[in-house]
Amino acid sequence: MNTIAVIGAGTMGNGIAHTFAQTGFTVKLIDLSEKNLDRGMATIAGNLDRMVSKGTISEDDKLKTIGNIITYTDLKDGVVGVDLVVEAATENVDLKLSIFKQLNDACSHNTILATNTSSISITQIGAVVAHPERVIGMHFMNPVPIMKLVEIIRGYNTSDEVTRLIMDLSVRLGKVPVEVNDYPGFVANRILMPMINESIETLYNGVAGVYEIDTVMKLGMAHPMGPLQLADFIGLDVCLAILNVMYDGFKNPKYAPCPLLVNMVRAGKLGVKSGEGFYDYSESKKAEKVAKMFA
Ligand SMILES: NC(=O)c1ccc[n+]([C@@H]2O[C@H](COP(=O)([O-])OP(=O)(O)OC[C@H]3O[C@@H](n4cnc5c(N)ncnc54)[C@H](O)[C@@H]3O)[C@@H](O)[C@H]2O)c1
Image (cartoon, rainbow, N blue to C red):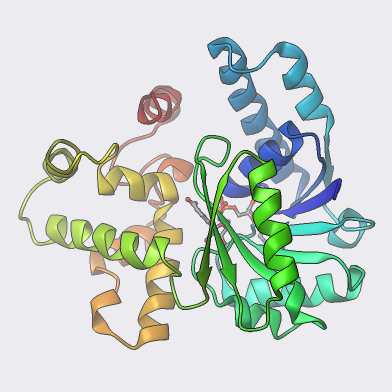
């Protein structure tokens, strides 16, 4: 496996492209517009610069990594000849089903089709392609170049062979893969999102402020980042989408998104990526705050 395609150059897609390219893969990075691709490439370049300045990689490694990435705005062109596709487009079930239908037509039946979805059923996605045994969840964590975990999700039809290949590939990327089954939220978000939602509910109920809630969890529970700050970093729209999938999937009110989260997403306050969420990430403060999160 040498050439892969990544669909989506947003928060996760650019991190996934970066990680594969740094390991020596040729990466075809696909998004809807040149503007999105430029933004994704600028993020990759900025993250590589930070690694060079920390001495983690050399200037030559940086240039090689960037040189391994080719950008495309056309999905069909981007997936020609690839061994693996990792889909990291917006968390929306209809969008993902439509992308996988296109992949079914554009790729060979031997191409492994992975999705980075946080919560959407791998089995449901697999059902729209021929040979669903090659569809698998490859759930990277944010920020991808730094976080070790990859949650590997087996859909109902995913084969043992594809699971083994993707587990081995994750190790080759320097990650630690963990195999789980396909139920809403898988493991990571089934546990994380109720905590984030409860933190938002605690704020909404006026029990404490943003700083206080995050400080209780950071200093009291030894979490490296408070849950509200983490929600900002994940993207409040992504958190809302995941909670809705779990709410619908389990038909259980405990997963109902807090009205404050719903309102913030409606108001365009999506966290780091929009410049404001529970914290302010206006351009002047953004780089400093994001850097501090991972100091
Ligand atoms: N944000 C996180 O912390 C996180 C963590 C793990 C997994 N995920 C999952 O990763 C996926 C991407 O999330 P994100 O946070 O990177 O979202 P994002 O909004 O930052 O980026 C999504 C990108 O997909 C692009 N896109 C949309 N439709 C497309 C299409 N048809 N073809 C090509 N590109 C398309 C958008 O233009 C955008 O650039 C989601 O499934 C999400 O649940 C997110």
